[in-house]
Image (cartoon, helix red, strand yellow):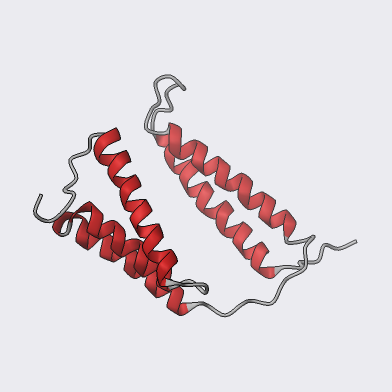
Length: 150
């Protein structure tokens, strides 16, 4: 009985994961491994590589079992707005402060959603800004500028 690839996307993704994992796992072999208590420079890349290889094997085997679904069109608007939101956060974090950057990233990325409402976006932005203030400034004591004038 011959194996038949039922999902070419899963098959290719599995091969890609195995290839990338192999580069990390075998590329890190020239560095000292260390121990779990005192990790060496090869410790994390080796385990990450072998984990990626295991994921690739799982996806590769699944490609012989599950049927392929037709691809969906790319949501360009959502993709561009989410990437733009991340860029806006990076641009605003030093100049506009943590609150402005958080408000911008939440509202711009929410614009890319299918169920966007201004009320939900602004409410989420305010709640997340308060959480960012509490976690990063008060809890962790990180030296973020809260507002441009602070």
